[in-house]
Length: 270
Image (tube, rainbow, N blue to C red; front, side, top):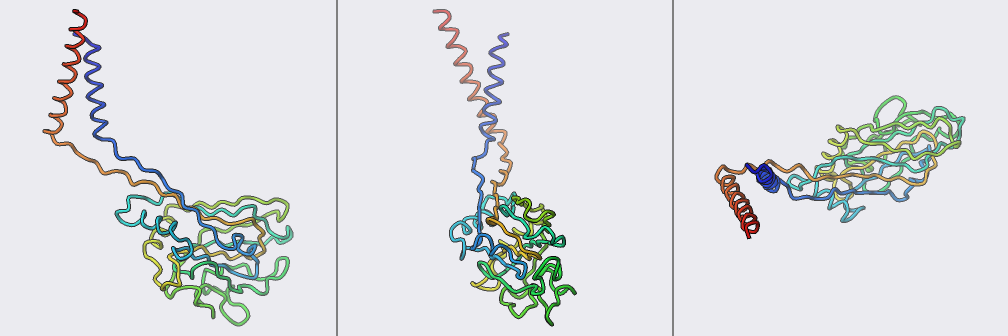
């Protein structure tokens, strides 16, 4: 028996099977968003900031992202990250500094600011508390709640809006070093983000689908903030070939191999 011919036949059959199984390829997409101003006013310690992201502020870029992630859009949200470029705390003596970062549902569009902790005017002064945690004792200042959803500036958020804590950044050496701080969302946080995107801006046209909230309990100089989302094509469904189709395919391959084999024998005889 001609073993090389037998191997060729098996390789051709395997190649045909792979040809039937290969999905149509698509490219992953990276969507990058930046607030305005890009450094969020250098994250001043006396304020909290909401940055609402939607098609109103990001145009076609966000619309494309949302259509990809919608049911039937064919893409998964595979990563999300926040990057703060060259961030550092204003004074190395301020050892209690904390930057709270939150994921928001239905904040106002664009960048909004609110006076959060007016007593925080110097080294290790003022309360260290997350404005986006709501009614907690350390968010009661100057005779009122300075907390997300409970202030006189309630228009910053939609009624019933929610948020989750993402990260807390602490600078141990102040202006001695500046770093590029990167926070990658966990799988659970990505699922929450996807839900916020698909739920839409429930508060009306003045509100965003989702946003990022920053509460700096100190002053953090930086060179800009970006938020990136990566999407990748959903895995293709399994397509099963019927026995009849498989049989026809193998017969065609067999005929092609046989024809090739006889052609070689003829050329050899001549």
